[in-house]
Amino acid sequence: MRKIITDRLDTILKQTKEVTLIGYYGRNNFGDDLMLKNITDTFQQYNLKVNVIAFGEIPWLDNSVNVHQWGENKLEKFKTFQKATKKSSLIIFGGGTCFTDEDGDGFFKFMSFAKLIRKKIAYIGIGIGNLKRTSRMLKTKFLINSSEYLSFRDRHSYDLAKSWKKNNLDKIELVEDPADSLLASYTGLNQESAATGLVVAWRNLERYTQTTIGNDLKKVAQLSVRLFEKYNLKTITIIDTDSYFDKKVGQDLLSLLKSYKDVQVNYMESKLYEEKLKVLQKSQVILTSRLHVAVAAKHFKRKCYVYNYSPKIEYYVNNANNEKIEIFSNSVFADA
Image (tube, rainbow, N blue to C red):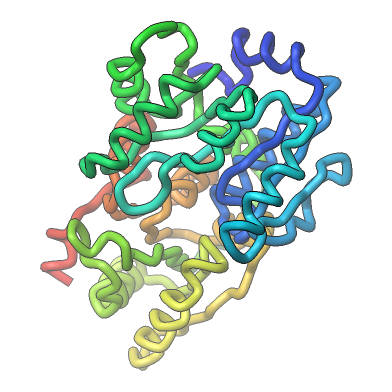
């Protein structure tokens, strides 16, 4: 699959002097941080001023990138957006499943505003999740047809977007996940270190109660112990893939697992993506409901059980075709 910088995107970036990146940044989310890191590193090859709008500080980001933080209310957010994009001719949403019923709408208000003030918009390395609500569907179709360029990280999203695009179908391309090549660069590092534990990286599923187990963490704890015993492991380590959104889930899971007398459980308050990578590298088995944890597991050659809470999980696992990455659904919890 093609890298995120295709010939078409390369041409666009060479014609651009200043760009602003938006996405789910500044929350210490493992996957989004990996994608942002790879995108900004890749952009350094261009004579390009790069701005990022984030929900918090990003201490690891290169000093050449200007970071603006979203305000607390709608008015402040629009002021931040106007300030950050004032001299940018191109606004890019960088990476992630941004069109869904449960979570994102592709920053519809801000991207629509950008078009209103005659700026170009683009989406790179994105995906389409559960999308059945009429309002979300209309917003998605509008943004797809308003974009100067779009690239999707899975075939299903790519085909769906092309079916909705009214013209200029060549503006839509299929690329690898923006985090993939960065994770590949870690392959081989610390691979020989002792791996004796289970790492649990569980997502807050409060927005997915209609199609998943939601936040019924007793079932997750029971499954964790089953894997712990199956592989004769020594420890269970819990990490927050998203240090903002998953923290309560991680702490509640810790309390549940502590009730098992024969299980040694640790909770790692790692926030930076490199710290989380080190924990995953030291694992023997991984249990997760987070896409990029599964992507990391593939590169680290770790056995990984990943919960199919979203279409993007199934798209990735089918495409990866890796025997170490095993997808499971609600039926597994029935046996827990």
